Image 1 (cartoon, rainbow, N blue to C red):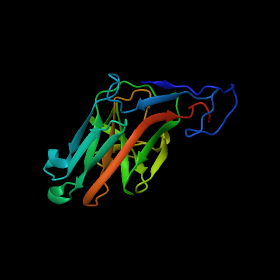
Image 2 (cartoon, rainbow, N blue to C red):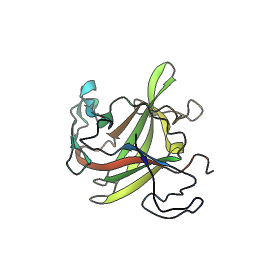
Image 3 (cartoon, one colour):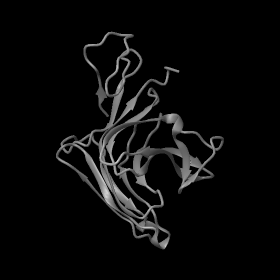
Amino acid sequence: MKKIRIPGTSPGICFSLSLALCASAEEVKSIAEFSRNDSKEPRWRIVDDGVMGGLSKGEMEIRDDGSLHFSGKLSLENNGGFSSVRSGNLKLDLSAAEGIVLRVKGDGRTYEVHFSTPARWQGKGITFAAMLPTAKGQWREVRIPFSAFKGDYRGKRLKDGDIRFNPANVQGITLELVDKKAGVFELEVDWIRTYGSSKSG
């Protein structure tokens, strides 16, 4: 995972760039830059509702411009209704940050970001999910604080009292479409990084 430093700044001086950084308080970490030539980049794969008998079909491509292109067709038949692109195994400590920021261009649909951790609920493996809204045909930087990630077991949101997200042990990340709307979809992701400082509050 790369660390991104912003040159030409003095400690304690906050300024506004695309990531709105404060040099003394935070250090931006790159989670994924989607470079074909970086062996340290996560490997990604498609997981559709076909694992449960559904008919949705997703495709992914790492493009020459260094972006992830995730597209396909969502089907609600056979009790289906999801398509996702998932990273390989990760070992990330993101606890120093406030959240993640993704630079995305979508189709106006709302996707989800899921983190995998060792956490379990009633003995079952779970993820922690948050919404990823997109604007049709426009590149946007979407910030998601870690406080927005809620426990999720197969689409069921868990109560905060049941279990909380711990960003200190992230083992995987998933981008998923599960908005219960049949039809084609398309999402491009330029990068995924952290933002902010967990100590700022």
